[in-house]
Length: 143
Image (cartoon, rainbow, N blue to C red):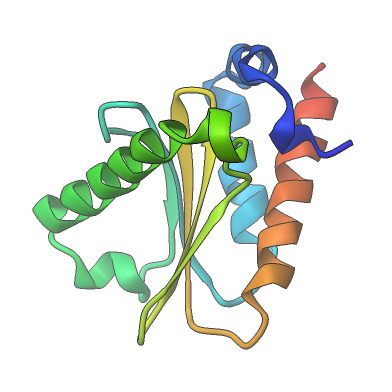
């Protein structure tokens, strides 16, 4: 059973389980999955950062605080728009955005969005799966 398909009750449990200290731990664990990862952020439904881990020499350096805020709001808006089709197509398990200079992954966790930005790589689905595994291992550890 894939946990990303479970109804929103699971997402409620996830957010209640992951307190701020756990969110920090989750961001650090995800950032250590691969050397390509430059930024990991958990964003609330208003596009505000709840927790973030970013490398000093990565994409975070290239963004002004205003552009970073706009980028995060874009991810929240995209997740909100995707929910409109949950009944027809099922819940979104995760998104991969491929740009020339970076890859961006996003995962909806109840009313939060987990964003991971990496350097380009050949097999983004491998990293996507590792991120999912890390999310759920953290949740299991907290329960």
